[in-house]
Image 1 (cartoon, rainbow, N blue to C red):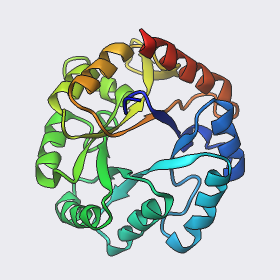
Image 2: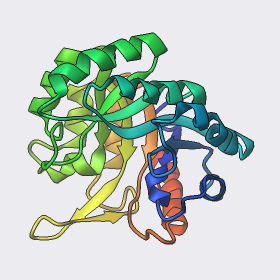
Image 3: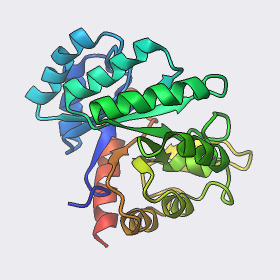
Image 4: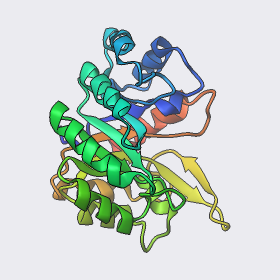
Length: 250
């Protein structure tokens, strides 16, 4: 299976549920068996307790393919996040950097990435966060490649506007540096406010984006994310899974 088609789900979708056993059950209910685990469901600063969480997911038949999104500032304690990823068998951490600390953080993250063999992807998070637009991403990737690349969140990419935030254009421009993707879709109000929708039913050209990923040799992690319906996300997430599988067959 192509990496772009082999997707899991972001645990933040299930943030209403704090019990990892419940989250693992919900992952299987939406017909998936992989998860990107976020800090809602694990304390990545406590690697000694993390194997117990890993066991919960493994016993349910769910693998942890990525951790995040984690904000790196260059503190030595952040090495623990790589320890947790290694304990889970994850090959990726999705990340943010900050304007005041990226210069000290990136060399440390590079070193940990080499030490553990775990890639780091800078998660674009719209126009209001550092690393959300392509000029900044180009600069950070130039400093951190090949260990650090971009993690394209398709919805937040679109949030900065169609000229600078075209997911297909990003897939082509950053080919070879894309460590992962969040398949996520927005509709926008006239005032620019966004609304989560089932992936492939909003403004995202899902087939075109996946084709661009594949043409660029994408080999990273792929994850669905849907943040609406907080108390009962499974029905919409199942529609995301079914919609994506149907669209990707065409």
